[in-house]
Length: 194
Image 1 (tube, rainbow, N blue to C red):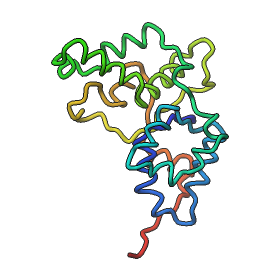
Image 2 (cartoon, one colour; image 1 turned 180 degrees about the vertical axis):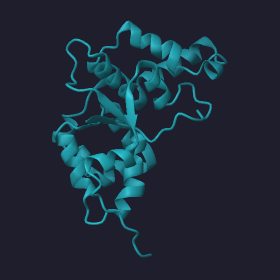
Image 3 (cartoon, rainbow, N blue to C red; image 1 turned 90 degrees about the horizontal axis):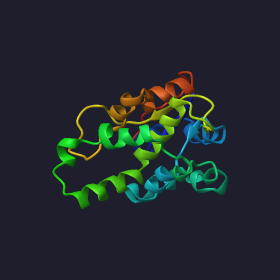
């Protein structure tokens, strides 16, 4: 199983899992998964990690800043979206109810910002893995590791990852279920005494 991880999942890992990691199993596990190519961090997600909550993700998962790990990042500009994917972006991923209230220059700016986002990079990678495109960088179908749910879009201009995945048949999984699978149910988390 290959997963492309989103910023939200890394944030949740750092904030809610690491403090209760009995035996400090998670950091070596995540590091190994990335080294083995089983967990992928895109360059766009890495950039978002720098600024989210004052960089706490990169502080706690400091190995992500090492050259060896940075070299493993997928750079979105290496992936060329085809016409079908861009149609998805323009027609299926966009929340037209909100988006159409903007004038043309603001719509263009929002679309450009989206194309630079971590979500876009994840979806483009997942699309490439699902469609088995020529010269794909993926050997297997990749899942998106996300904590987003399909409900409530918080009046954002683009739909959440699970809704976008459904458009082209990509798979997604949340952090709890993913950790259950990769540790075969052996991860022990404990409540620490205050």
